[in-house]
Image (cartoon, rainbow, N blue to C red; front, side, top):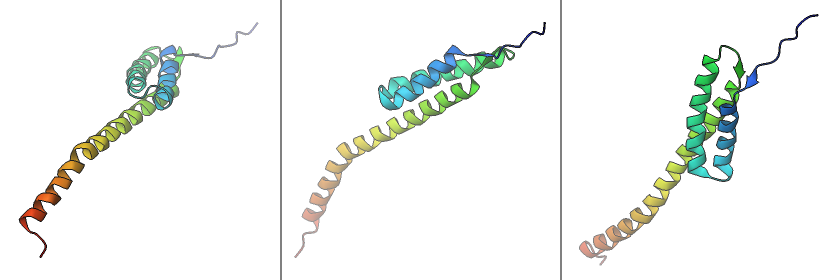
Length: 105
């Protein structure tokens, strides 16, 4: 009787990383991104150290990419909002002060 080799089992950390990465775009932006990044790195280390017993490196990588992309997007949105909130009043103030210094005749 020939023994059939079983396929490698998927890493649970890789699956959770992928779910958190997708969830970071849908439900919980910053928290999901951080969870996806941490678990993605842990999953890739676990898969590399398993000597072929675990698979799911692609899922871990996808979770990492989704997490990092969401984190960058969140930081950019925060920067734009802060620039709008603090930059617009300063811009308006500079226009008012420049008009006072150099009035139109």
